[in-house]
View: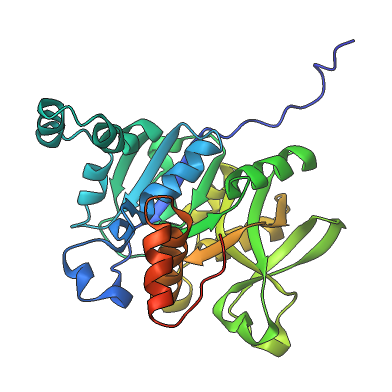
Length: 303
C-alpha cells in the first residue's frame, strides 16, 4: 500500500556559509588571512564546516565572503602548480590531501560588498539557492560529533514534518547575554516549537537555557523575510531577527539541541581549544602533542 498522498519533506541539498566578517578578533593575522582559513593543524576551519555539510548530504555550498577574502574560493579550487610537483615526485598521499577540499561539494562564492549584517549575508546567496530549503552554518563554528550536527538537524526536521530548524546548546544562566536565546514550547523530549529568539538577554530575562548556535536549516521563505527586514542593532540585518519574525508570522521553526563538542573558532579561546583537541585526536600528531604537554607538567586525558 502506498502513501504517496502524504507530504514529503523536501531534502536539503544546498548549504550557505556566511564568511564575510573582518576577523578583528584575530588581528594581526587577519590583515591578509581570512579567519576562516586559519588552520586546525593542517585543515582550514572553513573546510571543516564544508565537510560537515557534505557529510550531511549537501551537494552545493555557497560561501558568502567580504571583499579581499577571495582566497577562500581558491582553497576549494584545483591548484595545478602544486599538483604537478606532487605528481612528478609520486607523492600519492599529499595528492589526496590536495584534492580533498575540491571533492567535498560544488563550492561557489558570492561577495558581500557592504557589511550589512549576517542576515544580509544569507540573503546574498538567494540567486544561487533559489526556492530551495538550505542548511546554514557560520563560517567559524565547528561541532565534532558522531553524527554531523547538520545531519542531526535534518533528522529532526524529517521527524517533525519539515520547517526551519535552529541548532542549539544549553548554556549557563550567567552566559545568556552572549547568545540568541530561544523562547518556545516543548513538543517532545528533543525539540521545541520556537516563538522567538531573544538576542543577548540579561540572565534574568532569558526565556530558556537554549542558545542558538552553529547553524540552521531554513525554508526558502526566510529570503522574503530578510528582503523586507528593517535594520536592527548597529544598523545591520540580523539572521536571528529574521528567524524570530518568521516564527511570529506563523512559519514553522523548531529548536533542537545538538550533540557533540562545539567550538567557536571565531574566538581565540575556542580556536585554541579546537586546535589542541585536534592535535590530541589525530594519529599523526597525538603522541608528540601528549609528550610535549607531559614535558610541561600537564597530563592530557586519553582520547
